[in-house]
Length: 236
Ligand SMILES: NC(=O)c1ccc[n+]([C@@H]2O[C@H](COP(=O)([O-])OP(=O)(O)OC[C@H]3O[C@@H](n4cnc5c(N)ncnc54)[C@H](OP(=O)(O)O)[C@@H]3O)[C@@H](O)[C@H]2O)c1
Image 1 (cartoon, rainbow, N blue to C red):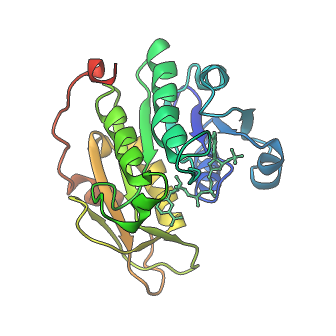
Image 2: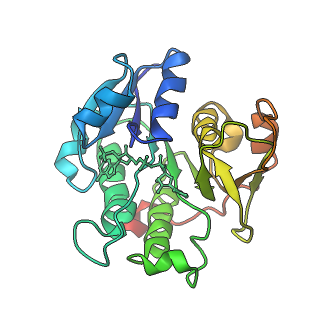
């Protein structure tokens, strides 16, 4: 791509894999997170680190300026209310990033890592600061932003070295674990596949021996596009 790609949460366990893959493809990568120490520990020097907090809108404007794409992989707090509640990162933070992107020129692809179960309000995960409700609100903000987007809903994340066949699903009815490397691959591949634009999907990896690289274009092409939602005015 012609301009840098921002990985918000790029110091995290999935985010650092995304940043490395993008660098390996020759992209210019901006890693965004709060901890400089974490960036030093987990990111190669080639990744440009910007200390910023998605809860503080003024801090994200400079690192996002001029980016051709954004991958948002932020882990929420679990307090019921206050600065460490899921609302602040899963909804307000997403909106801060969208506002910064929409205020600048261009139309960057927004890849949002959400999670399975977001539409199931009675799931136990929603007991943590209404995490699922706020994730869904963040998804809706992205879907109605007018930007090209991909919403990825992983199930429970694992770090098992061998991960078998990957399944992409829709409708948020299933369950299952997914390997972090599969999620990172999906974030990166989505940026290069037109079929991954305007879709929301869940991910599940089969437990078993490594199955080689998934056929990404085929998987994305098999997805149903989201129903077009109201324009950005819906966010106001
Ligand atoms: N664990 C699961 O089973 C599971 C299941 C489904 C979905 N997910 C989601 O999958 C994603 C990836 O998970 P992971 O294991 O890679 O998470 P992780 O290792 O905990 O990384 C989270 C990243 O978020 C950044 N971050 C947190 N708060 C931030 C803020 N206010 N502003 C900017 N950056 C912030 C962290 O950096 P700093 O702390 O330095 O800011 C870090 O880079 C997360 O969104 C997670 O919620 C997880």
